[in-house]
Image (cartoon, rainbow, N blue to C red):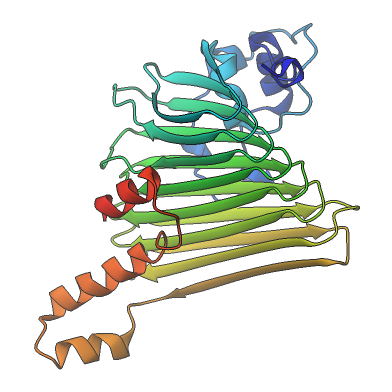
Length: 339
């Protein structure tokens, strides 16, 4: 186990100290620009009757959702996957607050599916710290059934060594409020991070994604593809940042968000941020918002396909294209079966 990786994790006392220092999330905080922060219940340890903590805070942490599980003393599940191993695993948090720490060895091939905890609660928060060794190949995915838990956070802190490949894929159909945040550090040359998400939301669902990808080595690559199918008064936000370091030549990064609005009250907010400190890079971003293609609808209906069936065909095609480029694996099989 990488001792430095473990030592850099905050303790419960440090997390509480840092949360008191940061305060509750506010809309003027760029990490929470689009999130309904008024819906977050104030933890007891944030009360005004608490004196300032004498413990030094974990200054490197800035995200409330990342600190919350540790501050609530979630017992960490620590697992080391040895170099060259081939493993499949399902991870499920048994409590409101969960913390998983994974050390994945050099050249390992790992498939991780994250399952929901459906125990009734006002708020749930999970944190995953994943250190990926050289040339390891890792897929992280979740495609859980509809879930109406009132408020849920998932935070991923991923560090990748040279040549490591991580694919992060998800389908979300939750009906309440949720936020997935990812910090990915590409620390070794040739590391690659591929992110794909699909939201299929209706009613008053409110789901939010926050990504920060740090290119900290030359010739690293990252891909972000987010697609949304929104009906009713559903709301989605996508806040994606790419930061390329000073000595990181040959970096390639792309970000694309595609949204189809199936009702007038549905909405999407997108905020791409690029911070580039080297001129030998290729970084792109794009965003499209619209309805189902009118010409494609006309083509299908004119050939005798009922309008509702034609809409379903186009929506299914739009959704499936999100994951078609993935290699054949448990993740792709699971995601495509959900569609």
